Length: 56
Image 1: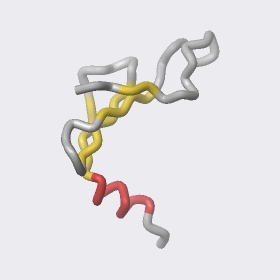
Image 2 (image 1 turned 30 degrees about the vertical axis):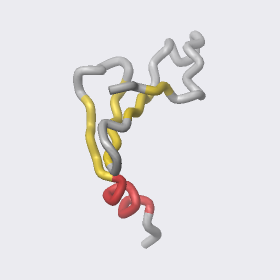
Image 3 (image 1 turned 45 degrees about the horizontal axis):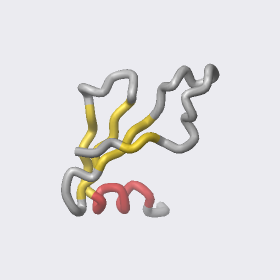
């Protein structure tokens, strides 16, 4: 799986190089992890993200 870093992290001293990383393990799925703790990742479906973003 290829992990991609948030473009805002930059690795500067303010962020300490810590960031959120995302990967697409398979179509319709998204994996998210904190670079400080890469062993713990969250895997969600794109449908779930659409539900979370839906206005109330």
